[in-house]
Image 1 (cartoon, helix red, strand yellow):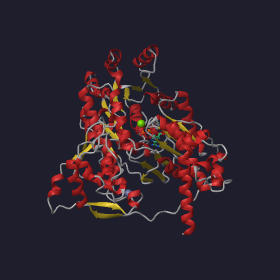
Image 2: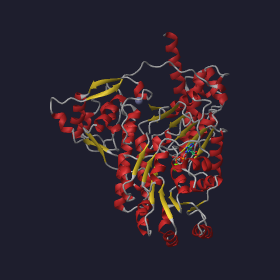
Image 3: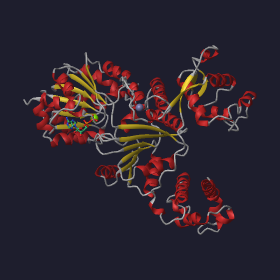
Image 4: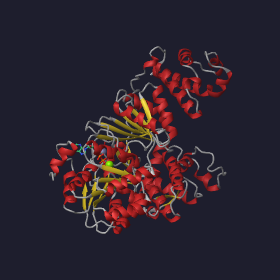
Length: 617
Ligand code: ADP
Ligand code: MG
Ligand code: ZN
């Protein structure tokens, strides 16, 4: 028998263990149940593969990731380790053959989907075989508190009971809040498990929340900053993957895409293009990234807010694997929560759980979504917030995240909070955060198509002098602190929270840290190649972006069908002010004038105004 260090070199070709690996391997080899919580890419596979080799008999690895099992087994084979996988991708004959070989003792490691455990054939095999260890990979799937609950994982414990003797059980995950860790230990019936948690803190990542009113525009500006670098752009729907990838290609970025709706050939090809650097920018849904190990990703942009911090941290964590500085930016706008809520209810419809189970899962999902949304509004150090969420103490502030870089001012919001609450109590309970703010600001005409009641009219415009963003932050904060409560489906509405009556006490004071707005930044340098010929490059860029926005909104591809580059250049040249002047531009006909005229003219007049202002100032 080789020692563990010899095995590390001989089978895996590594010289030393990474953080956490050795202690986990030691615990397993001493026969103790073990839970390993290591970040994605931290090297969890080795923690069970290596002891599997050193123990007599077979190790069963339960994993939900059917698509990765084959790769894992191929990886083992390359290193001279005999393994197999049992899942629904095998034909019945292949399955029988694999099971036969397993009975003959030809495999050291067998990967299998959790559903397989209780099939009679497999059980019969398992009862006779010498199973030294059962490993549960992606173990958070067992918990309803986790982001990816799979009921089939709950049956692992009963499988263990069926065995004539109990093997060592080890469990691994990259994301486990303290509650999820407890669930892993209790639902797998672990016996005094050794718990190894390595820190999730990633020193080289700078986190940033960027609030935006115009995502596409800000996204473009951001991407220009990263020209020439490799990065991943995450969105939450397949449709937006398609659109953004398309937009990036138009802007001249080498982008490719990935989502579960593509054919497996295209997924494979695009993934390879990304890893090889042929298309260093990947636009993808959360389906992308499992098992991907590209070290030089220098930015991860979330075009949409993800459904929970577990997903966020895992996806953002794909940046900077090589230890170099990397940026993780989340573009946040007011639609992000409702978008996610919609998807959340939609996905639970499909999951096929019992009604009670579904209710529990939906509630957990809502709570996690809320924690994610608060992350986008917090004034706390972002690293602090994330690590606390995962049950880790982080003593100082990181100094690199967008909150550490902003200055905040402690602001007394007692008066405004009281006023909000006073009015809210009399309003019908149909107000979400955004609609409530817009009522107070006096910028909506009605809510849910019902004419305003007496009290709504009284609340209308009471804060019309306030900044919209500012007011929203206040309301968010009041929810976070429990003065207001946000509940209901599908769209949660506001009501007084459990701490509401504290505000009735005249001595009670509410303060909040508010970002001090920096002086308006100078216009960033424009790096835009195709426009060198044009007269007003900045205007060209805006027209170009408007064209993409219109094309995306109306599903027109390619966007030059809206107006050609020549037309855009002519607009830059002649700066039309009226529909009549616009009609004289080459390529603009009555039809286009009617469809898009107004929006193009708006951009031009805005630009001309700014220029006029700049010339005077
Ligand atoms: P995860 O924790 O996400 O499951 P993996 O087990 O897939 O991570 O490992 C991530 C990468 O790290 C793999 O390429 C693996 O070969 C590599 N790796 C694991 N352990 C070591 C080590 N001790 N030295 C060097 N590379 C390692
Ligand atoms: Mg893994
Ligand atoms: Zn920070």
